[in-house]
Image: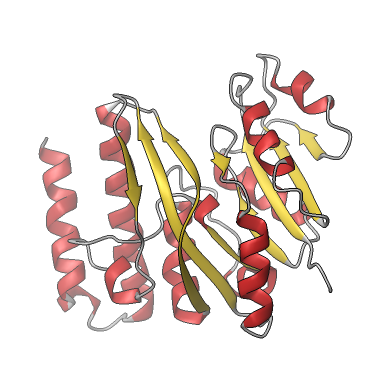
Length: 252
């Protein structure tokens, strides 16, 4: 049986308190053909010392332009057939890689393959809930729903899909995943499994960060429609709703 290589790409910066947990969650998969790439932004808190303990990790530690830039660098270093991004403060659930490969091979191992799964979200206040994404473009592109996968650890895809979509825009600080998903959902052969892929530790409790993230997602959506429908995009109901919501964020 062929075991396709999975490249796990982890951007990190000053993540000494969580990076080991993320690395261990990859090792716990016990998958025989995995590559773990860590792109560290020049941490000063000991993150680098933890990464160096693991000889199997392919890493680089240098200043970058932010998370999107680190994700792009990681993709350049990766050589896996399947790609997944794992943030340094999150973790995979046991057995996820085997399930991904099973679905990938049973579906024909297409270069347009993408598998979307559920996600456990743990908030700073202790609340834990399960995010169930949609695989319909109209659901992720509707500002009233925004049912896209909230964290990139919950979707795996063939690297050629990203090569077709392109690299993440480095100017984006929060919505680089959403930028990718809007385009990938139009081109991918998307599969869904009712399986928790891992845990997203959503511990940022800054209201300003939440507003900035939501506003950037909406602006990414507006820009998508502007390029896809340049003549009539202003009349699209999703664009109208998104503009209204951005205006509300500005007023608050």
